[in-house]
Image 1 (tube, helix red, strand yellow):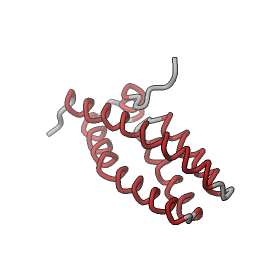
Image 2 (cartoon, rainbow, N blue to C red):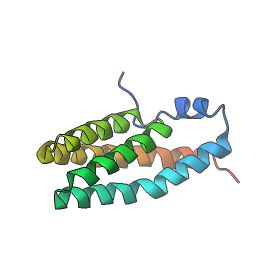
Image 3 (tube, one colour):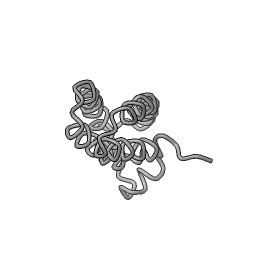
Length: 118
């Protein structure tokens, strides 16, 4: 079986079961990831591979925190392709990343709905 786009069990375990912190981190991800993703799209549109690499690195870390392993891997691949100056590959990976990220965010919103905090 492949990795889930959002491994909520591993995520909650990594926080020692702290559901309040889990909700806080997921909410921060849901708020910040679209902005960073759009900034990455703009960098790719401008052909700014240095900025694209930095944004992909940032997204990789964010995805890792919430245990979105598939997306973290895609972000790493984007980061490496951008560092190599390979705009075409970075753009293709970005398209896959956006689709995968949308699905992961849906899973995260469902997680929050099942685990309301506050």
